[in-house]
Image 1 (cartoon, rainbow, N blue to C red):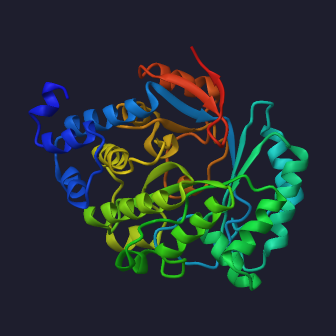
Image 2: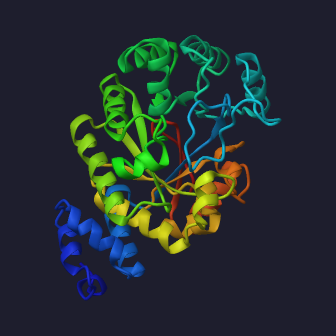
Length: 368
């Protein structure tokens, strides 16, 4: 352990990290309260370096949001529509194929597909979508449908979670995104998203996906009404699920954006600061010792803060994205997408090695 960390207020935690010991709930709470961003970042960077070296990953991907009409009424959401608004939409399978074809390149490796909980779109629609995408773009991995969408489909179709996942997997599903986790603690979740599957259900759905051979992401929404203790509890529940089923490949802390949603209007909430964002990334890297990657989502962080995050435990910056709707509806000012050369430059100029990957973290190209 270097002298800076040895003299810091978290010297004892640093000793545990250096020894490969697992951090406790109390350790996590202390890290959030630390106030020494440099020590926290240095420790997270060392933990990430032991796992990933200087390699930082990105994917040539495209986001697809089939509909913004949603039966749920989450207080933090700026994306959902009731269906009668001028900007409410539902895309047919044919429309999605046509839109996707316009921006497809031979290097596209992933389609990231999430949308609203539309009460009239049943399982057949989503299976047809997966099959059509596989037919037209056979080399692309389909990372699709949050655990919340899986639960909603199961309820409206009279099926259980595993039956829904098996049908989607047979239609071409390769992996799952991590959305819908928000905060697991029931007290917070009841205020944020009372209509969504509970935290234990979210974890169980991902556990089923892992047992079926699907790799998945995980997320946490922070910066709203939760407390640091709620974040630590969330991280520990993810770590326990990973111990059990082992299928999570990356964790994505997502900052709450307060514009154009009920929660922001009612509580006068503000955007998170850069210090909060970097703290969450670093604490996540230290607590989630069994997760391969922590993602700094550049659309949320901005490219400049994403560069800085690469010294705070981050080993993935997401991808080219192409068309992002969820965060931009909530006030994001970043671009809708970046090309692979811009992403590689962002990573390289931060002193790291850019590695283009696919949805399952198989390497496509290392940029020297």
